[in-house]
Figure (cartoon, rainbow, N blue to C red):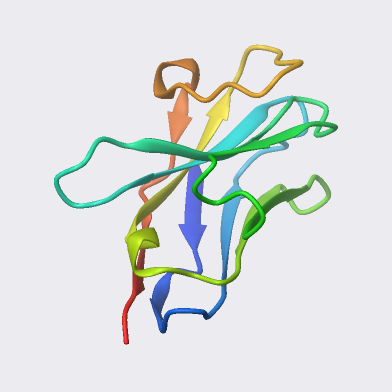
Length: 124
């Protein structure tokens, strides 16, 4: 599964960005997630969707500010990021889990395919 992220960039604190992750094949049967990696840190879970898309989960650090959605008709996953903070600065990756998931997995090891990442920088 090939994944291509876009939408990253430089934004001031308090601003918003919407990240996109486009798949080159139908992905409605996959669970999906967003992770991020800041310099010198491990890659961490940000948000995820179950296979059906009926359930979502978020890291505590982004809860209430970020929203994960998917558009199966466009084979695209989104991450709407509002009220951005400098500590949100990282490379953001989307990921696909092939096995059926009726709850959101937050471990990197649970995902099979990854995009190349898109840089998000929050700075004044």
